[in-house]
Length: 291
Length: 319
Image 1 (cartoon, chains in turn brown, purple):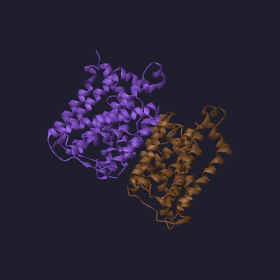
Image 2: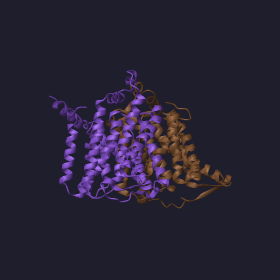
Image 3: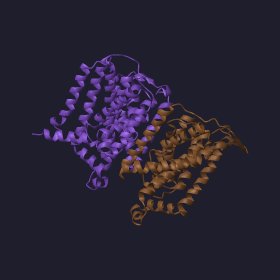
């Protein structure tokens, strides 16, 4: 408790910045949960895939991760659409535990395909701006994380407009609320499911591009995020978009502070304990759930 | 449970003993011992997941508990291997009871149950990696001290018999549960929890018994693993690999059947070795096949076939 206030402030600020990207990862997860009512266990593996895609885009085409953001988001939207339409949908036949198993199977396939291709070494992009910092008062902030924070907020706003102002958004909300009713008024439920899954996957592609400048890639890197994302989603209330963002910021700060006090390896425990405690004591989430 | 119902299990034991007598290749014996250890862990998962419908994604918690408690007792406190393995099993069962008491009382099921078990396993993995008594990241070696009295054997065939006997016991226990009142209640909980509760089944009590037995069995597999390889670390004992394999084997071999976990473990390990032989040691390829197999089995539930055959065989055997 003997840290000077500047260091604490810096930890909180960096935690908030990191938390925004966590929130973005969680956003895709909570969207898929809110509409399809499935826990997408392959979410972490899809993030890993997106990080490798951004890595390869840089290595093979010299594309900066920030420039790759939009093409990769489009690519991953299509990928997510097809995965839901061709694999998860038909294989699970609407059964909750089947979906859990199918997405587990997907995550095993993706993770190990990355392992077979890229081997288990961790890799980092060496970008000139990766370590650049800006000074705000007494606090040093990393530029890539600041960009991540900004893009996440922008994306959340875009998503909000999509959900409230467009026909697709209305259809998504209709399916989320009452899928039989939505089907009766002529909404193609299987299509909306796939679109939602595609949007969730596209969020991951953007998160991957935001993470890559300051983070390493390895076949299991998604695992580091997936339980964090689940924690955030549970904390924010399953299916709640604002809950995911607030939860992400909160978890980012918790992680940063517990890393400061307990060291990096034990610091992770804080997140898991929060996850377990929230599930046991308040499974509807801290920020009020919208089922 | 009648003698006739237990005959296939005795048959398995006879085959295992014959194999241990006639097979001399260490590679084959190694493969079989590892497969049987996995099958025991999977049988534990099967009790809770296959019969009770509670899909755990974190059976590594129990596997690791069994492995670490038995290894720490032997290595740090000089306890003999037999009581150490037994204590490992009991500790895992108690952990199962404790987790179940928290999780089932909070009413978590389905995906939530899967996630929270995964989180428990991860917490234990991080703790085992960071504390001193477990040997931390370097892991824990059980010192070599050959002799039946220390549960360490110079030849692998003796260990194969030990693993086979333990698996046969696990299968007998599963069969006994299946034929008992609690087995029927467990299946009722799996099929329709609300209906089971309405018929007077004490849901919490049934689930707690199932998770304790399940954890104990998987813990025994963990202790056996430590005893066979004489080394564990946090990524082996509490790693996601064992959670995944303990779940895959019964689902692929037939969840909710006595022989499902053994059949599934044989298929998985056979595939794993087969791909290694065919395409060399590219890491991860066997697991890609496992993942594809899992999706296929969920898509086309052919996996019930072994269970159906077994059920028919038992049915036809009656006079």
